[in-house]
Image: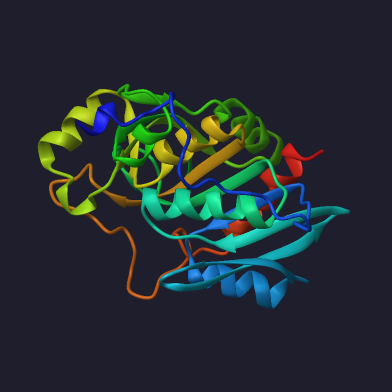
Length: 253
């Protein structure tokens, strides 16, 4: 069974090994959006400091300055295995212990406004990756949720706290499963949170995750909640990078 996959008694066959000359940074920001990556590279003073490779191609890791602090930044991949794998790869090419991850998520509560920040407090483990990093359980606690909430308070950014449902298969978000997770207190559904938290706990990393409320499941039928070509309030909204930078500032002081 997948829930029996965690092995704490034998070493991994492959482990990330930090390179001798890996640049040290104060925090690393991950986005899922190619448009946000393009915006940041074109509008901030960035330099490429590292790279890693998947079969899908090369991923550059950028660095920008934040009041004298070094902030790394790169575009990651959708889905728990690839997103977690990308963080594991950075453990070899940069020296960093604080990771900020943001992106859009499906909304399970129609009362939450489109584009509003959602902060996960626990993540339901409806994926496979997390079971290789911690023993089986229904949820993994997102331990830095109070820190993120404090940052939003300080910056006057509206937010809502709640559980999230991490799934491997968005085309199998059935009506019954939606009702079950909403009743259990989940306000969002996405594909990475539980796995990222389990991996971060295993590796001793500090993880800070937030989502922005996107498409709505809490409706008679699925509501994409955006018009064709719309970016504002979606996962490609470049304003969300400003929120990530505010969070990077808050956790690296």
